Length: 139
Image (tube, rainbow, N blue to C red; front, side, top):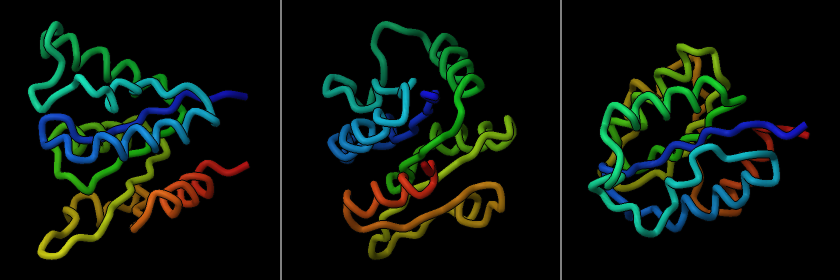
């Protein structure tokens, strides 16, 4: 059975991982529909979506989050929005995987790292991230 997957990654917090998001989303597509595939859109900048107001984005994304079967969040680039999405996913009793690449002089927020309701996994390569995702989603 195909599932609905909510992928969270930084938009306003920085777009330096956009290509990585694209590759993760492509990998997730084998498991089902990625509701938030626009996160990897090349035209999406740190300014966010141009033709949609903030309330519409909030309501749309929460509806997607509620209809998702699980949440995969790439949390290396700090993002208020991603943190909010992770918190709401926990509130909605969703399975949540947060992927994080360790970096010198940076630390994952304790609110994510210390959450007993979130699976946190460090990775250093796309191949490793894919293996982690595969293990989280399972057969």
